[in-house]
Image (cartoon, rainbow, N blue to C red):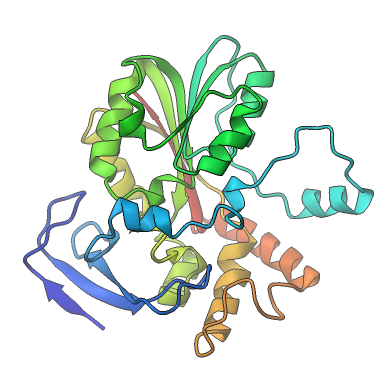
Length: 307
């Protein structure tokens, strides 16, 4: 379906040429009874919900007991079997943050979940801070002294020009007010500091193939989805300079999208089906995703900016 919305403007480029391209529902966490419109900007190709979901409604839809980012992480004291080690090595999914000496550096993780990455930065000597809307994730991370604020970045009201490194890995696409968020990120980043943003990539080959069945469309938990150009434009408009773009898609964009497509008429979630639970298909899909990354067509992108 395509319906032009000339009375609304793109939050990145301010174009009034928006069109509704999908009317769909949550295909991951069982919220199948409410439909959401997804618009595409004719100018910069940004995807966004219309009307935009409120932050309160979005936050209420997360289940602290099941959402992956809120679960306890392994701190190195747990026993891991050889089979688990092999599986994790073959199906490794990890953000490719810039490598730097983080000793005594101020590091902020926005949407840090239970604080796994902060835990390991702290072990390397960094002074860490997190922001997380989940109470359970916040409480778990703070057991390790990770200094996680329970709420939004704006509510945290952090000190200006403080952070040497800020990361937002697979959390920025969950934000309903990206313009204001980038302004706040700029305010608190130290001059010369870096910002790392990992989000789904709507220029990816799987998105072009699967459209509204794409795994990372993520309605309504991803109220805004980006491509490299419009994400860079958003940050550069607020004063940042692009340093690097990396592509880091994984098996979910390939195999998860295919499972969603096969489930399109039964409203089962993306984790239900024979394909996504087949270990051989997982391995093959992960290798295919690596090829897409080399071609700059991967499902996920990571952009590093400098203030």
